[in-house]
Length: 230
Image 1 (cartoon, rainbow, N blue to C red):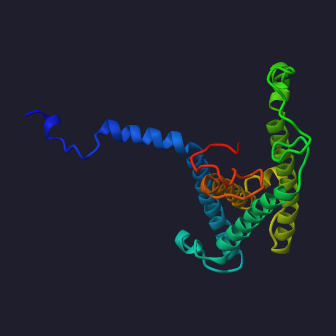
Image 2: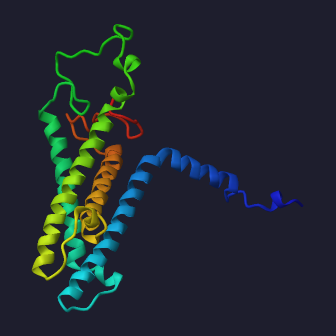
Image 3: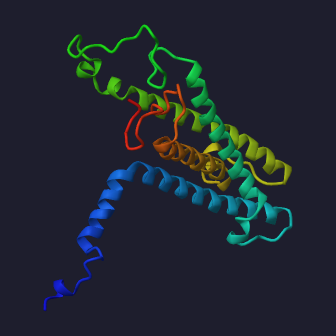
């Protein structure tokens, strides 16, 4: 009797299991990556927050705490919850606004009544003749805004950090040196993880939930398996 005949027919073999994982990844790649990044940045926030918290404890003559204990402190949860609150407020309010308000030309807005879908071939599409910069102008602009805002964060954060250092008899640091402090990365990572949490929630919740009239939602009568909002 061969080994194949001894296999339990009700139990999937390695090929089926691997195929199931591949199919899961194919169907859930976006949410898996987004939530993975959320957990990565949240973990990073907790580590640098723990280091920052213990540094403050020592500066004030208090005992440093273990990592597990830090995860139960208000220092960790206040920073986490205030960002979750702001992200969900922002995205929820935006969904409601798109029900009543429009922005002509925006991909995130519902169409105006006088707008019609142009027929195929009626005019040359901009993407067919545009160069690299125009084809990627939105992402490049957003990256530029991110870098500019991060630079302002580093500069203003260094000023605030130096103010606290002087109050406690510490030494001033340059903006470049501030990049190496846990204070900066605690502030940044707590925002980054909440961004990915909110985006991931939108990706998953819009599979089965609806908001009538919103361009951020599928149509009310659309099946859950439908991808996209059209």
